Amino acid sequence: MPDRDPPDTVYSNGVLVSVSPAEFMLDFRLMSPDHPELEQAPRQVRVVMHPHHAARLAIALAQAIEVYQKEHGAIPGVELNVHLEDAPGSTPSGGGSGSGN
Figure 1: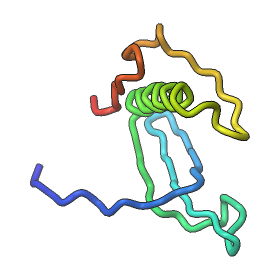
Figure 2 (figure 1 turned 180 degrees about the vertical axis):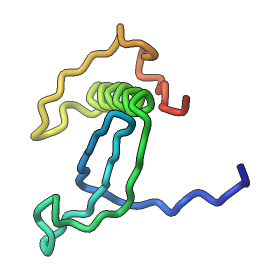
Figure 3 (figure 1 turned 180 degrees about the horizontal axis):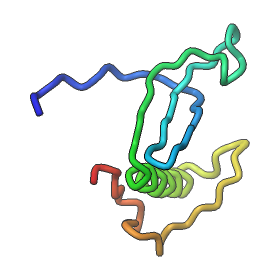
Figure 4 (figure 1 turned 135 degrees about the horizontal axis):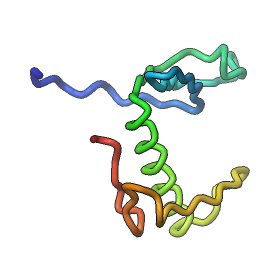
């Protein structure tokens, strides 16, 4: 695979997730006063993942949220009680297993 510069960083405040038997598709959107509905907001980037990698991403995000909440408190407006100590591939203390496999 040839070396490439990484893509530019994009900001997203919403995501639509679609699934099929073969893949997960994450459409990261940018909602604004002009586009207050998620489905109508412009797509910033699309990420397509194999279900295995999508599951690993979910574990990594849950671990990161757990660490965030321990350091900064609960995220306002979000009730999320996820504890993944026994999840396959999880790393104690939120060490970030990543989703790179």
